[in-house]
Image (cartoon, rainbow over all chains, first blue to last red; front, side, top):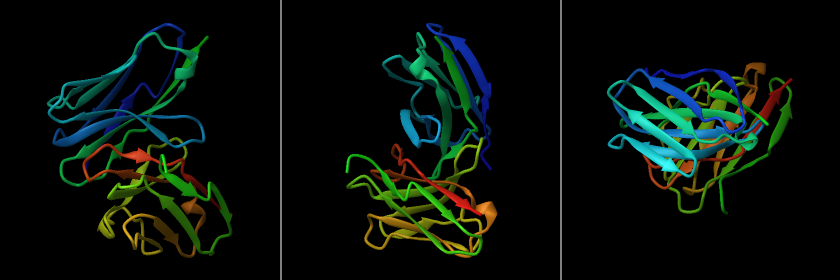
Length: 112
Length: 113
């Protein structure tokens, strides 16, 4: 069974600092990996999707890397802003079964 | 519509009652997924539809849970004889095809008293 772990569970950073969020997964045979943002009481907003053949994806201030062989992904958020405060969820799609396996999330607070 | 929509946004029911939760996927998306999220946890997979058929229902916790997608678009998650442990946020997602990026709805918060 695929296990997804996100460290740290929670962190606070001052505005302007870069954020580094880590995700690890136990089975490297994944089809893709997706990062989501979740605001309190809301659904999930897709941030980035990395296919298994890719090493990274970028969107604006966000960059996600994937190292499939070591079972790791990192989400970088440059020059953090208070509006980046949210829970960030990492999810992997194990090869062939079309379901996402989620971590518990990184709860981020950006202090103005 | 522009995104995945779910109704109702909140549902409060009594133990033993029957509930239905509805999901409207993004137009043209053939794959539809249901997940359940408890407080402080990541979402957990329940069931996946490709078109009208349930391609994988292995995440449904027991036979009180059932889902349909009769016309390959809207889906309904049905829970019989609800229990307090069923209280959670039920999330629906859709993707263009299986294996593509999944887009989530706002969820339905179910509370069983």
